[in-house]
Amino acid sequence: MTIGRLFLLTQLVILLNFISNNRASDEQGHQIIVFAIDGLAGQAASKLWMPFSQTLASKGGMYTTRARTVYSTESKPGWISIIYGGAPADFGCLKNGKCTLPSIVKDYDSIFDVVEQQGYEVRIHSEHSIISDVLQNRWVVMRFDPSTDAMMQYSFLEHNMPQGKKRFLFFHFNNVDKQGHTIGYNSDNYHYQVICVDRMIQRMTSKLWRRNPYRTTFVIVSDHGGSGFGHGQFDLQDFQVPIMMWGYGIKREQNLFQNAISTLQVAPTILYASGLMNVTPSYWSRPRIPNIYVHPPEHGLDMNDGMLLRSLDDDGNGQDHEFWQYCPLPQMASHDDQHLINAFLIWLIFPFVLFFCLYTLHYLPYYTTLVGTNYSVHRNE
Ligand SMILES: [Zn+2]
Image 1: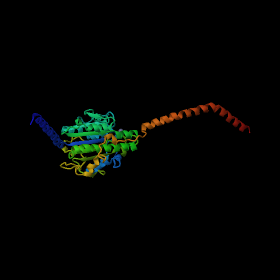
Image 2: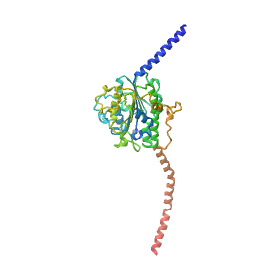
Image 3: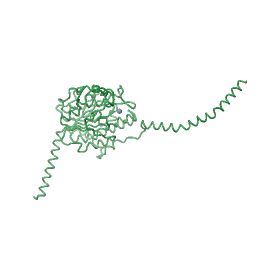
C-alpha cells in the first residue's frame, strides 16, 4: 500500500469516526423546541387555521386553546409568565415598557437559565425587541426583523445548531400580532398569517424531528390574543391562548380543553417533560400541568406513525420548498392603508366643497334680496 492510499484510508476512518460520534452524541442530546407566537388568540389556533400543529399536538401530545395568559394582556407580562414562570406583578410589571415597581425577586432564573445550567445550548430567535426587553438584555437574542423565513433559514445553519449537544431553541414569531394590529384580529390577513406560521412549524418540526426523532420535545405557546386592532383588555378574546406540547416526555392524545391551565405553568411543564423535575426554582409561581407525562420519558412522537410523519413531509410531490413560499399573504388594504385612502378621498372632495362654499357666499346676498322681496310682496297682499 502506498503512503498516499494509507493517508486516504486514515482520513476516511477519521471522517467515519467523526460522523458516527456525532450521530451517537446527537441521539444522547435532548432537544427542546419552543414556537412562541405573539398574539395568537385561542380561537385562531383551531384546526381550521392551524391544521398541522393541531394534528401534531392532538395525536402526539397535549393541547388546549383555552389556556389563560396573565393580566394585563400585553406582550411583556405574557412573556414574563412563560419565560420566568412568574407573575408579572412580582417583577413590578403591568404593561409593556418600563416596569413601574421594583421586582420582589432578585436573580430570578428564567427557563433559559435553568436549562443552560443543565448543559443545554440555548438559542433565542425573535422578530421583535420584546424578548430582549423581557430578558433585560442578559441573553443574546438573534433578531430577525421582519423576516420570518430568514429566521427559519438561519435556525438550520450548522453554527446555530450545535451537534451532539442538548439544545433549547426558542423561536418568537411576531407577524401574527402585527397583522392583528394593522388589519385586525379576526381579519382574513390575521388568519392567513396564522396559516403561514402553522406551515412553518410543520416544516421546522419535520427537519428538527428528523435530527433527533426520539428525544425532541415541541412546544407552542402564545402571550395573548386580541380583538379589534389591539389587546390589553380584561376579556376572553385577549386572555385565551393555546398551549400545545408534543414529543419526548409528553403523553399522547390529550385534549385538555376542560382543564384550568395557565401560561405560568409552561416553564415547569417543559422542565418536567425533559426529565429535569428536580431543578424547578421554588419561586416559580405555579406547578407543572399534571398527568401529561410519559415516565420514564420515551418518544412522544412515534417514528412508526407513518401518517404523522408523512403529514410533516413536503407538499407530496417531494419538492423542497423555501420557507417564504408558505406565506403567500394576499395584498389587502391594511388599517394604515385605509387611513391613507380616507385622506385621499377627503382631498378629492375638498375642491368641490370649497367651490360650493364660495358659490354660496357669492350669491347669498342676491338670494337674500329675492327672498326678502317675496316676503315683502306676501306682506303687501
Ligand atoms: Zn401586540
